[in-house]
Image 1 (cartoon, rainbow, N blue to C red):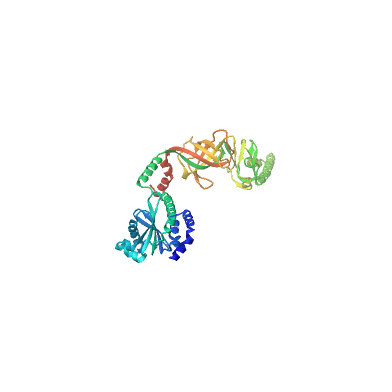
Image 2 (image 1 turned 120 degrees about the vertical axis):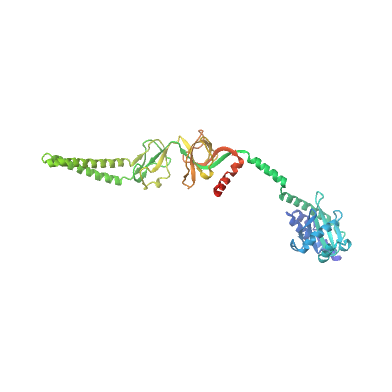
Length: 447
């Protein structure tokens, strides 16, 4: 008895620390572990059990000194049945000492009590703020606790009940499960929302181009010798744009000029001989045709030499990528080299991917958000759409849309890129959300 009095004397001063520890618990399992183990130096119990009440049944949260038993263990099966009977033996919400000999439990409870429990158990019920019992703490002991200790522990019981009530209140909120009525209301609300009319939209990459752009192509087969203008350089009508290599054509022209001189000399000699020799008159026609042929060939090569210097057909801005991409590159007749665009008539060139395509008509509104100027969107309307989808430089099959730019404000320099938002017809929200899944399902299922 003296040992039992002396041992708690050191711990009674730390009851405040136990209460602080309970208040700092963030989960019910942490609190249950503290409840099952921290009072051992004071009560010297054989075992402590923390049971949570779930209606008429009880759930074992923690056992002192060992891990939680398996759910299908004989001890836990017996404990569930015995806890219900034991709870009915409590009167009120004060801790009570229950003795096996005094209670005379039924046979199914008494057999397990004799095998697993000592002669008595000190039951501490914990009550929530709403008056509902939260659970039980069972201290398995050989004798009841000392009378002077029970009032000192009353504050600890209240702290544990308060913390338990708070933690289980949070758990109820996080583990809330909707009932059938809530599910039906949610389905009805979703059905009503699915019928709301919304504007169908699509996003696509876009670029600012000119509505009036003249394509400048190679006039003859050759090799680019020099680009005479820089990208985005302003040009006037007649400004030199680029030149083709003249080496082959100049050599050919020089050879043909010599052949023309030879043909003219032969024709002149034959004409002079014709005065004395009638046979030479028959050669005049052949030599005259040969001279005209050489002269025509020389004139054609001279004309090609003149076309090696390409000039701008109109005033505007030279639009192409990089001069180094073209210098020394072989080109054929009609191959596109650059564009001369009018910066005063900008427009949007939108590449709408086939996967994102929606029903669009001429005149549908479009908003362009430039990458360089995201806070200054441009507004416009669709002017024309391509009949067929083509593969872009990024290997994306897309429709080509030309869109006007309305108003006078905002950045509109040619070559700026951004994302265009296209507005289609109004549809219900359900169709708007399920359009692409339905299209994918039909393509996959084939119906």
